[in-house]
View 1 (tube, rainbow, N blue to C red):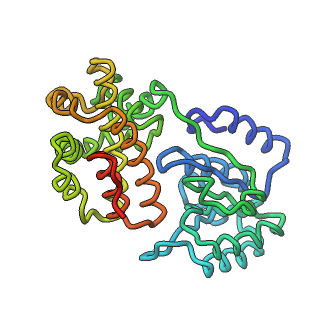
View 2 (cartoon, rainbow, N blue to C red):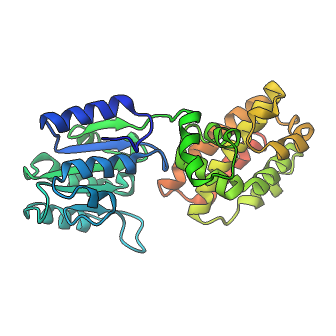
Length: 316
């Protein structure tokens, strides 16, 4: 049933069992970073739960599968959107046997919005199922979590991810695809972005060289003024780039790297960066990406991570 979703064997087995036995829950919560497969899991689950013409759910055209996300120009899923969804949920399905609501981005809801959601999760209509997606459990109120069957998206093995990526990027070798999966820590969506954009290699190289040479001003200037979406992408790419520096420093094996040419060309310069600083900076970049996605100032979050790379001092 869930062949299109890689890895996550235990989760898939549980969901298949629920579908076959008819013991379907009223609410599900899939947690994982962007690109981890949670949206794929939600759509596949919706296609089986909605009943008649489930294939239309996969194409995004089923009238009884409704996706909720921030309105155009808005940062958050609003209380008004939740109330509108709640009213709609009590209307019978028009085509299927159930109505499925995919709430894409619970982390994009404030406490008032999540409390409004809680009221319908506590007493849902029998024909409605709510599938919540969040980048982290920590962004979801404990009371909301308590009403859901919760699943954390799993790491996808490099070979499995590479096989899927090969369909999108047939010109690349298996090694290039597997290296991207390693750099993306098993996240297929992130691996695809790294391969398609070059992982912002030139920018990451510039930041790392500036840090290695003690030029904190140049390193900070490289991320100054980045819009939110780009800042999050750059933090993700920079974390992958720093992992490459760390891997080559420890093994001297270029096959362990994704940004191979850049790492080899600058390895002597990068040796100036303290190992503990590299470890801390990778964590700082990952934290910065999460903070940016949670609507912390992108400038402050990115500059804090870069300041860490330049010597471990964070900005106020």
